[in-house]
Image 1 (cartoon, rainbow, N blue to C red):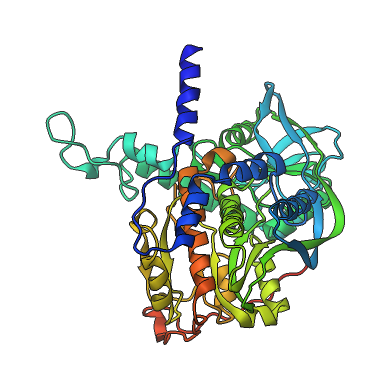
Image 2 (cartoon, rainbow, N blue to C red):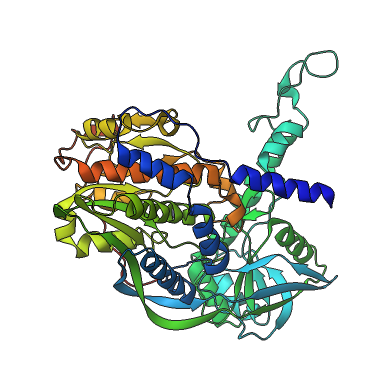
Length: 542
Ligand SMILES: [Zn+2]
């Protein structure tokens, strides 16, 4: 108990540390006030805590996402910053609710399961039945003939992993192969197992995994249907539901996407639980499953972006944009994708309102919807607001996780070096010592919402952060949760962003839009400047 009290008081002391000393390149009172407001009086922890823990996941088209939009507008209004929801389409509305999946036989166990996005539920009542693996068929005719056999069963639709230990453990602890050379107690350090060396534990495991995956792909192909169409055929034939698993190659972590079904729930099981059910079915040990899910389709509903604005005083028709997508997947609150970017932009705008309430140019913060389905919210904004797009000086986008901002590319704009270089030179060394600038850089055709502006010739930049194992660990996973945020970095990122926005809003001239010469064959960039895609204003469709 005593130890716990001590730990809590140490934590409180650490959080109360005042603004660190900083090294200023220029004597600019606004930059100094931004630093002071963003470090000594940072609100980013409190803002992010409510957003992640109380507001929660924000899958496009869900009532939860709509509630999150209302929260964001109200939060801005509480800061005295005008904000609005802008409808740009309608979407198939869906609620995930609570889902439970239990193994009843051959032994009882509650399984770690999540309903996939836009999957049907069970109307809250438990549905019970045996699990079978999708059988192996010669061809689609044989599959069609078998189809009535799906009735009353849960169907397993993914290959099982041979191991739920991440590769890095096999590489570290697996037995070395014959290719390891002189290893062992008297021959120096044994070499780490390599994937190419199938005499090592790791190499053998990978070969086994690849073979199982290829065989399962063949099993799916033999039905003659893609996965969506296969689920539809099976549910129409009376299948009770689907079990799947999309493991992320990290302990306890799955990626959770979507499976559009009308009647039969599709659930993702953890790597371990899917393997359990799969082996029981494969070896005829009679797995019996019970699924209970509140998932339900709610018809079409309007979808929105949220736009907040601090009006410019002398150049109101020129704009500096803060940009971050607001939507996430539905199983976790999208801490690093993209509550982190949202909170950064929210806090940056809060700081600016406090210390720079009358900017020269208008400052807009766009919180885009449906980035995850194809940059749809930001593409719609660019399409629907040609006047604003014409008047944009520059766009700063945040959507790369939770670490420190360490990289800005010029995205192929020739003036980026002069402008960004000038801004960065005015920032305190604490924020820039790890910052790498790449000029002129190459225009991105996708990745996040800045691409929706770059394709239209608008100088738009990604404030790229360190990864913290983003790809396997948090990106679209069930573990993208509040605890993964690194507030020490997020606080600084909000300060850095606010400073860049302030300096851009004060610039004498807007950034010229001259583009680099793009080289054929992808040398030094793409062969052509990316073209803008149409936003999806309705969806999702199978
Ligand atoms: Zn994202």
